[in-house]
Figure (cartoon, rainbow, N blue to C red):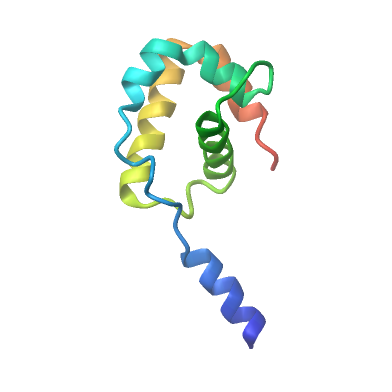
Length: 99
């Protein structure tokens, strides 16, 4: 019974809201290539970039299961931006998700 409780509790746990108010579109406009290089582990990352990359990787892998509504909105903005402006990079991002 305690194992089931732990599994259910993990499913209800959301990501931290510390990045919820980031202006993701401005960041992407300014440094999309750097963000992709960090995500793909091809270039340097700040600690913040690495934490965001790890969160995005997990959100994509789990279909944003642990995302709050605000985080789902942010992920959708990121997804739409890459699909429309850098579709090759979006394909690399998705392909680099550990399923």
